[in-house]
Image (cartoon, rainbow, N blue to C red; front, side):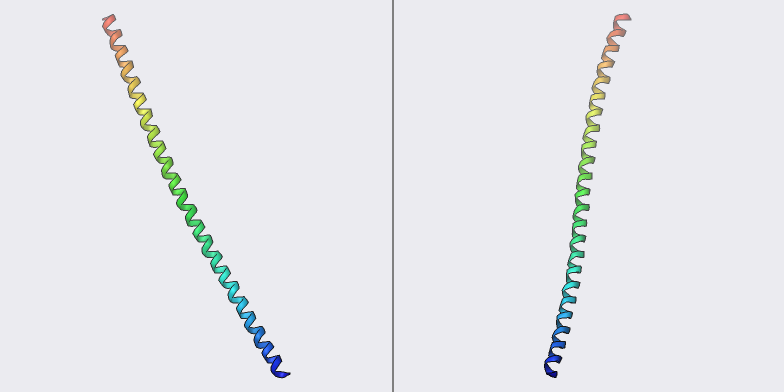
Amino acid sequence: MEKTIKFNRIGLKRRFIQYIVILLTSIFLFFLASKLLEKRKLSKIRVYNSQIEQLQDEKQRKIELIENEYDDKIELILNKINKISG
């Protein structure tokens, strides 16, 4: 009877240790997964930011082209007005 009680205690200790190890491993894996998700999110944010910058640069170039085109047209009209009045 004493041996079975000892074996039961040893079995309970082993199970307890196994549960602790499983719990700690689960916590560690959850921590790693959260870090990986955070890195992935940050990399997506960087990609989106670079895409936004590219779109803003393209928009600015188009605005400058339009402004230059209208400046040239306005200058031509002013020259024609000067020729007619002069």
